[in-house]
Image 1 (cartoon, one colour):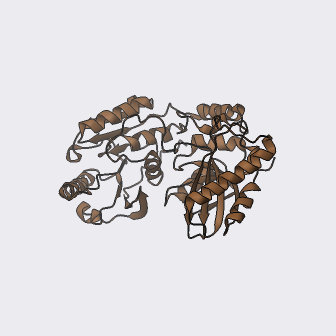
Image 2 (tube, rainbow, N blue to C red):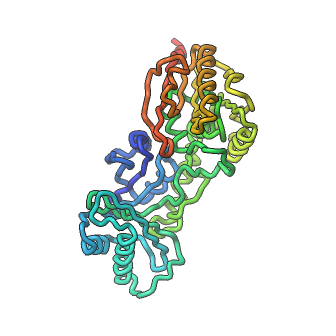
Image 3 (cartoon, rainbow, N blue to C red):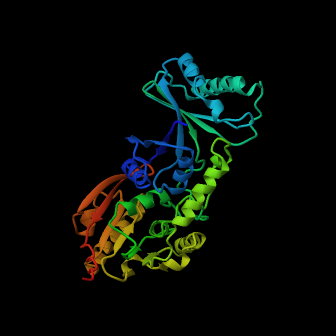
Length: 382
């Protein structure tokens, strides 16, 4: 069977990290594009990538791509694709759409044309005129960009940041995918202490623990494509067993966090407990000015409040100055923070060693990186 073309969608700015994750999982035939990484894989790779990718939003099957400047071209191009190989007679197949810089600019009209074309194709293969759509879900998207139509099947359902461990949320929570990206872009590793002085719902700490113990982030949730006959339960079972066998939960961790908001710490503790990591993460109600992480050569990774309201700006400035004081007390530590604050370095009293533009939702931020010394390498016995 020829390999499938799969797409791992990526938040803006994280495409290279998603590509690196795919490479670490063993995929080599890939192409990095804006907002996605296209790669070759088999049916079981749909399962593996849904379980394992930490910074991607979803895994799509690329059904086809073609020029479409007229509704006739869109209809015929869609009808020519092998929908019958995926969608059974009882499958539910809603169509979503997007259009940018294309002659076919009416998204509802494009969705209707694609739906009609798929129905006509399925009539021929399933020998029926009626589709009840009361079976497994096959969500389809038609995306038009500069008159090129891309048709995909969504295997993921709710986006991959919904790991399943966070039942409660704080105000403006950091997505799990972004938290994982911040960790991967830092110098932190399981052998180093990690602290978050504005931990909110604890997402950075929980994601770090899952990475340290090699826990696949998708293991606690389900996916609509688990019900697809095309993939089959055996592939899902094999991928799940591989993920469970890969867990290494015997590595000692030094993870701690604090927040000035007691409710946030309640939420963080509940999430850590739900993830099975409550004993590994120490959480306290503390202002950042009172935080003093233990150990040497650690990393602070944090997403401090942005102070979008005028009344909050002074509080944020004070917090950033407290970070500067904290760093002076931790000469061997590295500090990483995601913030839209233009004066971040000024208030911290230090120039960042590295900066990287990232988008937290639609908010343009900088990932400020203040690099401390690396821990000494352990001596090798002669």
